[in-house]
Image (cartoon, rainbow, N blue to C red; front, side):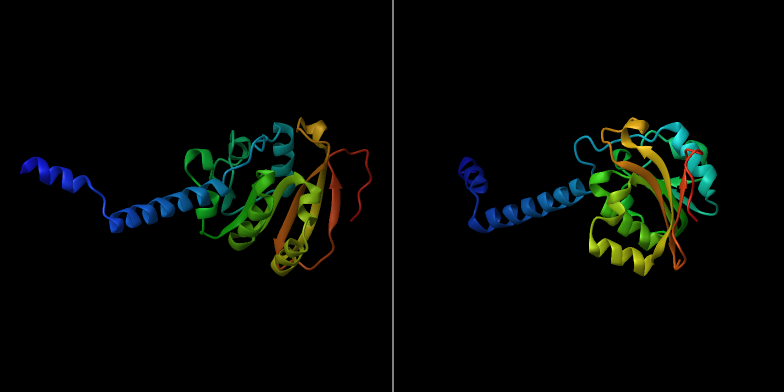
Length: 197
């Protein structure tokens, strides 16, 4: 009798199979959502020290600062009081909801648009080192950025190859400011290039 009960308990009813299937799909959906927040392939590109040093000096962030994708810590080493996120350390930027004064970072380029939009929700000032075309890649992004404020400045650093990046695009630090409606200036790390104001 005991053997028969044990066998019967192991037989799955259609209802139990449906519940397990539903639970499996929910877990898979959660995993896929988390995977969407992870950089793709060769998307972990560390910021050179000289660029991070110039960005921090040039933009001079103050108040509550967040580094949303810390990587090897090049920005947080320069701003030790800054809070940080890093997906590989279990601190997902897309879970961050506390307002901050500044965000400064080099986001994963495959997630750039998602980083921009979330940054606009939580920060008053946003500076990202990116291939500059990414700031202008979609009309929806342009309108979202304009509703947030605007681009106050682009600080140009050269091509990706100059920075040791695996692309030749023009790389710059884009500075968006909440409620900013003034002109956009361009500055250059290279002092031999004239600047527009």
